[in-house]
Structures are given as C-alpha cells and as structure tokens.
Length: 156
Length: 94
View 1: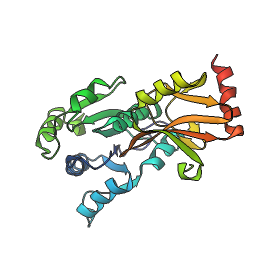
View 2: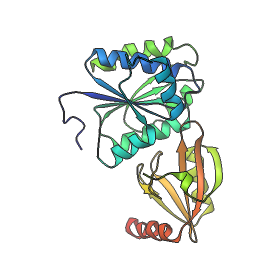
View 3: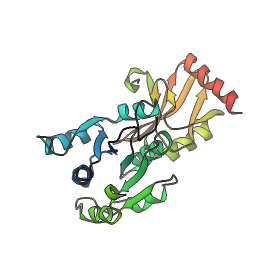
C-alpha cells in the first residue's frame, strides 16, 4: 500500500516504554506541531505509554487516533495501512528493534528519536536508513526539543 | 494477530538485546533460518533488526519476542507443525 493515497498527510508516533519522562512531553509537543502543519498524528504504544498521554490530554485537544503498538505493526505488515512519516521513540534496545522493523515494513519517511542516558550508544546501533534526532534528555525535554526544532520535521 | 500468552513458551533469555538473541541462536542451535521484521511466527509479527534468527531444536522453535519495556525475550515453543512450516523456508533460502 502506498503511504500517501489520501490528500491528508499522516504521521505515526511509535512510543517506547514510558520509563524515561521526556517521552510523553515530547510526544505531545510533536503532535501539536504536526497538527498545526495540517498533518494528522496517529499514536501507537503499549497500554502504559498510551494511558500517560490520554490522562495528560483528557479533552483530546492534541490526541486523535491512538492504537495498540502490536496492532499498528500488524496493520502495516499486512499492507492494510501505512503512513507518510513515522517517528520511533528510542531509549533502549527495544526501541532500535522497533525502528528497524518500521524501516522494513513501512514506506513512511522514518525518524529515529533517540534520547535517555544511553543515547550515544543507541545512535551507533542505527544501521538502517532514517533521519536521526538525538539528545541526552531524561527528565528535561528541552535538549531534545531543541534538536527537533533544528530539523523541523513537520515542515520537511 | 496472535498473542504470545496463548503459547506454552519457555524463556531462554530475558531482557536481552536483539544482538544477544541472534548470537545465542547461531551458537546454540545447528539449524536456523533468517527472517525479516514483520515475518509471522505463531501468528505473531516479529520485531527486530534484520536478519532475525529463528532456531530449531527438534519440534521446538526458538525465536525472539520484543516488548517495549522489557527488551527482547528469547522464547522456545514446541510445535511440530510450525517447526515444519519454518523449516520448509530454510530449503527455500538455500
């Protein structure tokens, strides 16, 4: 399936384990930026990561469609759905695995968003084509926000 | 889409890296195949950095299963039918 069959552009956010605090903050920030650019955000995460976002946005000002991560992988793999852009949140080895998976199964333009204590090691493990945005951010989201703003992916 | 909890699995490694799982399979099992991410094993889409190694030990299938919060588990599941299906791919890969 071609990722861009409808006039409305889409961006998928693949959330990682929410144990690193900046994830929820940066996800809401990116959702806001992409919505302002007219690009529809879709969130895919596990129950904890999704619930953190839903509780932070009870009136759904930012969050639109939100789905289980396994379901998103299944839909893309089975060619039932794809997206124009895909951001994978990476702060551990599992994040690298999910990003590598998206690089194979999806036609979306892939962004690896790398953060946390081990961000340098993780960046070194990225061997697939993508745009990498990285910062050593754990509790303070501003270094990662700054790195994102330099790339301005919503305008690309 | 299947659920890993429906399988009668044994955990060989837990909280491992994808690289550790691949190396374990290659060094501990004489039979294995390489698959791409998204490939279905027991109706579950595999997650990982390609090539993803899947091992065989008789009727057992050994494969990685990744969770966002817990890294990658290396699972061993006995299923003669699935082992035969995957072994058939090995012949195709050669």
